[in-house]
Length: 172
Image 1 (cartoon, rainbow, N blue to C red):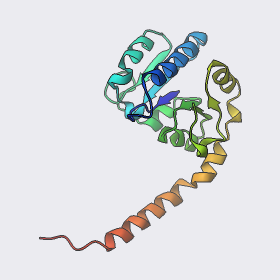
Image 2 (image 1 turned 90 degrees about the vertical axis):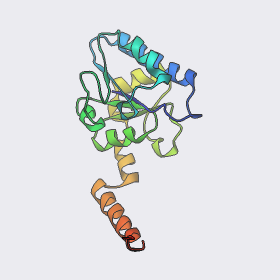
Image 3 (image 1 turned 60 degrees about the vertical axis):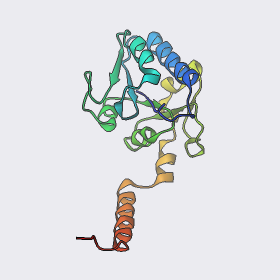
Image 4 (image 1 turned 90 degrees about the horizontal axis):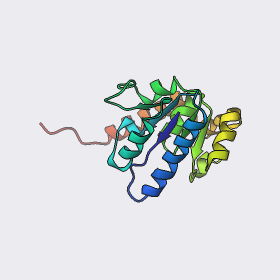
C-alpha cells in the first residue's frame, strides 16, 4: 500500500508528486502480480495529483482507495490497511495507523526525525529492498515512542475534561 499526503502548500511541489507517482508506477510495472493500493490523505482526489491518478489507473494491478468512489469507497485508512501486507507513506498519520496495525512500514523521502528507525524509500532500489525485507522496519520503536493507544486516549480524555472544567458555564 502506498499512502501520501501532498496537501500542504509549500511542503510538496509538482516535482515531488511526480517523483512519487513515477516510483509507484515503476514498482507496479515491475510487480504485475502484486496488487498496489494507493491511498491519498483522507481518500481525497485533488487537482495536484489527479492526472497522476488517472495515468496510474490504467495499470491492471493498481487500485485507488478514495473516500467516495471506486471499489474501496467508504473504507477508512485502517480498513484499507487491513488489506495490505506493508505500507510506504509520506510522513503523515497514515504511518502511525500502519505501525499500530503491525504492518511493516517505510517512509517515502523521510524528513521526520521520529521515523528515523523506519526504512527510507528514496528510489526504486530502496523500495525493492523494503519489499524484499519488510521485517527490517522497526515499527516497535515507533510504537514505543508514541506509547500505547489506550493510554494515549485516556490521557487525552483527562486533558479535555480538565480544560472543560475551566470554561465558564454556557450562556442561556
